[in-house]
Length: 168
Image (cartoon, rainbow, N blue to C red; front, side, top):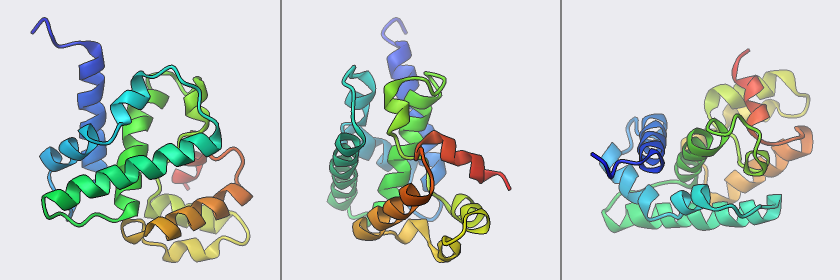
């Protein structure tokens, strides 16, 4: 038990929260944990590197592809939207909440995208009514990044603060 560090505890909890957020009708926690472990997310959390928005977006694309590839190796088909949700929940749990939203990484990490968030944004921000039709589990890489571009054009900053829309 002496080898069980806070870092490992945080990683395990962040993995569990990400799995719970995405696994319905998808896959199990063990498969999600394997994909997370192969993705570089844990190294991002441990790193003191400061990321610009563009640098984080590049990391996000790399990490999502790694997650999708790991699922593919065991015959699980994952969308970019599912990989993005894993990334955002894992980082929300292990970076944003652990740092009270006050570290520089918290400013660039994407919020978790889901139907509730998109519907509430659609109801409250002019020009985004079409978001009610978006199914986050089916987002391709291109459609995810088009969505992010649309959200960033209307919501600044685009980070954990966007979750204020999660509650109507």
